[in-house]
Length: 204
Image (cartoon, rainbow, N blue to C red; front, top):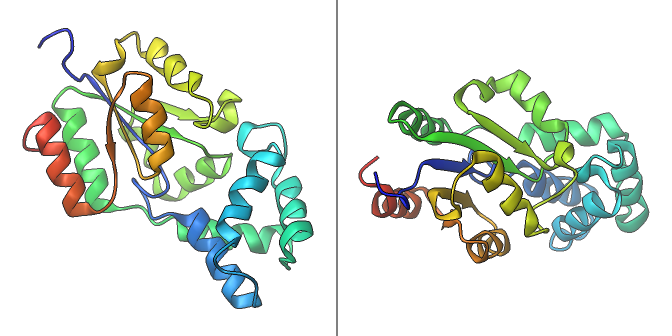
């Protein structure tokens, strides 16, 4: 293994390891309540940062209050949260990839802009046992919109950036990670991902 060989593989959660529950849940809520389906996910991404929720500086209540104020969304916190969490359906085939990579000696991790909802999802799916590291913005106090997060993660892994492969469905996150020197794959579809992973690591 050379000094630049990939040794760790980090996965985004929603949109990669699982279906994108946050976006899909907000779209579902908007459709059910006759609100703007197209702008609701964007409003959600803004509110989850503006409320401080995704960085551990605010609560779910703060987030939902901001969403009600900005979009006209209706419903109590628990009911709204349930719709979001139900949208995060774990992709079994992707977990098989994680297990195989780990068995082959790669360090596996999650790097996600998430909240304590990730803990609740782990209680349901029990996925954390397949990962060596879980980097969650809620506990780090820093999200992927901040490029220095990637340097922090690489330092924690005690590796060179190119040794870390980062997989995310968000093009902006992928670009920021790549700019910091990480190896990257943007997740688009199962078929595309499988081909890209094979190209980067060999047949998995």
